[in-house]
Length: 574
Image (cartoon, rainbow, N blue to C red; front, side):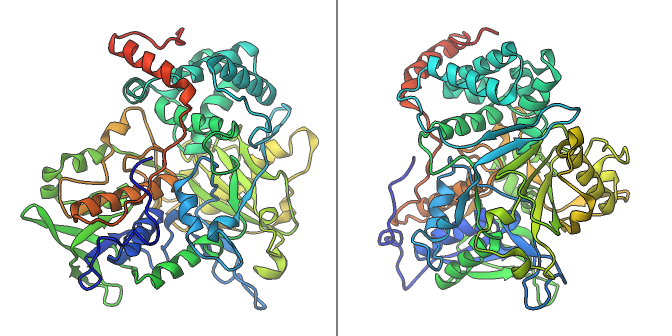
């Protein structure tokens, strides 16, 4: 945890009301809205410029499906893809608790509900893997290597039903990471591929599918063969301590109790407007103007005229996704701060949602489904069961839609099972049929009939995807991925340009993963850097880091010494 807590009374401590500084925030996603929130509470005059006319909330937002609401009902709720709030998220839930929501003592945070189970449907006659996903009722009182080894091997053997030799080996590799010092993590394990780290090439196909691909492509949209072992193991570590009830904010899997904009984004925007934040939508940043070592202005597209105009502010905060931020940085800016140039090495990939609107309720499992055997790495969740205050057919659509099966497709470059084409080569209709067929292959395996074609009322795909079936398909909202070694190309929130700051999940943060939590964390980091540059005495944003058990600190200190000597971790047997 960094910085001293800032109460409502101290946040604005250093700002003179008569001469508030102005801040231009570019990007209205979670990072930009977090920064705007923290700055406005400290007395800054903030304007958020969002490139899309309806893009406030970024990839976290929900959106209306055009033309679907009749008889006074709301349009069907679409989204970029379902989202969840693990219990190891702590910065974002704290922000949620500060957003008022009628009837909720803890604001929007009280709109989080627990998902209690996970399901891994299998194909080829293999039994599905269903397991409770909750904090242990009786976690160990002390976290020791032996306790961790027993917990990991027992849980993995029970849940995944892999050969015991493979379970033990995987548990040992996790124990190596858990006892590794920070230098070994960010130097050795960051430069090691997850596939190599867990020796996937030597193991069974189920080991590869469940522990390599299932933990990477299906969850964080990066390929196990290239993903950083540090990134993947870091998230596994966070889930482990969440399940053990250490340092967590809640249950391992939480979702919102209504469409995202209803439960979170709209109340947030209302709060920010009440704090004086201005929003200009449909106004993409064209370029930043750089002279004399500082940003002197920003050229944005005027949503009213369609032409360009230059805006000025005391400070400029870029909170756009990296693929949209990079083109706005001039050669002079890159020369002034080389870390901006290193961002060219960061990579993004497609992770896109499709919602299937169903004629009947379909609560397959009270939580997420990881369709681990699908070539397109599909995950899904039935949403109506998670929205207890909503009567789906009475509240949304034309009155005949009873549920929404929200899915995410994380692999767009492998052939499907219906057409033998990559997802990017298919038309939208073909992608939808493929996704449905791939889910049926697991859920309907062994003669079951969980998914039936007649259930489908309609579907919606993230409109950021365009040109499918054509020569140049595009995705305007991609996801940062984490090939080994790329951590060292990620920038800090403070830059060498004194009035320019960065936020977004590509910026270095403790989560080290493209998440809403990471976006929130970097929004806080950027505000702290701006406050320091401004000489403000306002209270700094608290930044909560992932839990690290004190019981393992002696082993990490030993590992630090061994790493300096060029020796392996004590538990690393190769």
